[in-house]
Amino acid sequence: MMIGGEGISKGASDAASKAFVSTFEGGISHFRQCYARGLNKNPALEGSVDVRVILSSDGSIYELNVVHAALDDAEVVQCMAQAFRKLRYSALSDGQYFSVTAPLKLKPQ
Image: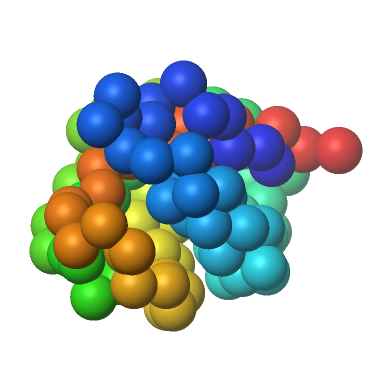
């Protein structure tokens, strides 16, 4: 499973982008658990889920949406989206919102 950075908003500071990716990587076990449940039902499960996350200046999730899902398991898609809510994000130093679309690529290994 991978996360790409192409969805990071233009207005975001470099520090906010790095903090988001670091938080994601630190909590990757939540996402792997979701995918493992799907693989138990379908060992060939493969695809992608793009989740848009908007963080408030205090680091809380202001908005969270699945913007695209190319994965044949709705439960895994919803689990992936909710996994973002389990993570604890740092407050933003500039006091603004931070928006990112996180593309999750899923492929059995």
